[in-house]
Amino acid sequence: MPVPNGWVVVGATGAFALTLPEPDVDAAAHRIVRTAATLRDQLADELSWAPFVDPLVVVDGASGRTDAAAVVPARLLLDVLTDGQPQLAPDQVTRIVAALEGRTRP
Image (cartoon, rainbow, N blue to C red):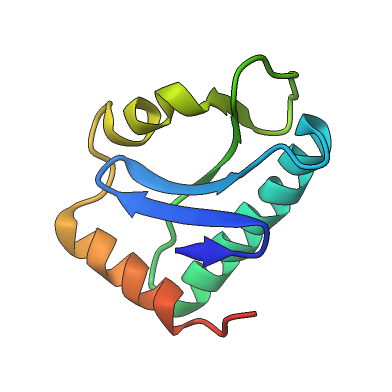
């Protein structure tokens, strides 16, 4: 699901806000952190609870570092989004997606 300057992915392992490192990794990280916080606030308005929305900067090849968000090589993105302990039940994923789809789109 697209958001300004990025995408949102919601699944069993959590909710993620993703962006590309444009114009640079640090600027992208700060931007996606703000987007993730906004999405979480919107979810809190729609649901009785709100999941944490992890901000990720997706890079191709060598990347810079930033403390603001996780930097993930594109080749590892699928593993980051799908591996690990389930954080959300199927009904929670459905409710989060419905809440996000119902928000006002830019």
